[in-house]
Figure 1: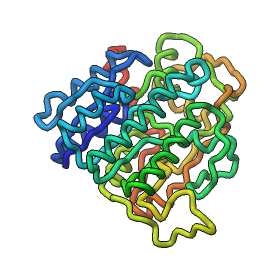
Figure 2: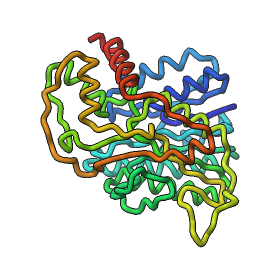
Figure 3: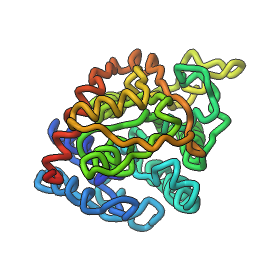
Length: 335
């Protein structure tokens, strides 16, 4: 298939693109290589893709509509995976406009390009952050998500609503994936595992929010990519069991689905750090802090619908995932 991947120089996007190329798909990567974090890491990820004969790349932002429209017109993708976005909860507290431009203006550009380009299926990144103030665990796609606690979460919830509108009006098949704390080799430097590893190796203290008591459904990158591919290959139809008198937020009479994609096994942050310390052979000096504004105490993915529909089964425990990340980090940064 011809598959357009936005955010192709990103953590998930580059790993997904590699897997798609390995199975024989033609991939067009689209990314603006911005400086939200070190662009050299993005360039290194991209360098793994460019030798493939079936890979092409366009540098551009989602909010740059002419460039995005040209990419669609030239490549004529059959399916699209939209992973480009302004990420990060804490950054949304200081630079809210970046989220409106990339996540709302950018996403409507993607939807319009898919609509007019006759795309068979749009898979897009949502986030576990949409659960916001919800405290019933595990989080289910059948739960209402009407109380976001960060602007980042609000934009991801908005993406789901926008996608449903296009699925309803134009019969554009869309699938939203609520990612739960993705980690692993080639990960994002603003994420906890990357930050902790860098600081512990440098002999610097680490900031541990909520005194390490909160839990996260840490999900290894290979498990995430497996789930993305399984959903990409399964074009949704309208749900014949959808009841407008008792609507299920995870499905619709339109060709629309939303899934949780997580490890289905939350781990306390303190334990996550302990595993990292064991792998590094060093103890961390910890600065214990309260929960940050915009963060939630716990995340835990109910993946029943994704497993039922695609056979998704996450299989990587944090002990294995952290081990692989540290090996990659030491090799990449020569430390």
